Amino acid sequence: MSQYAILIYEDPAFYANMSPEAWGAVVDANNTFTKQVFELGGSLTGGGRSRPRRRPPRSRVPAR
Image (cartoon, rainbow, N blue to C red; front, side, top):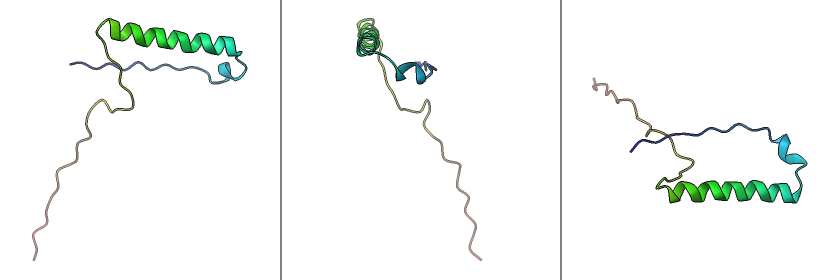
């Protein structure tokens, strides 16, 4: 199955002076988004690489 990455850039300073009510609205919006993803048959994952890391082939030097 295809995997897609959503990269979101935001300025951390935006949250520095946020009121508790505004912070609650951000959390609620995130929870709503997550719920809708699952309701529509999607899934979320985090922290994983898009591909497994591949090791280079090892070369052996013959003993003399």
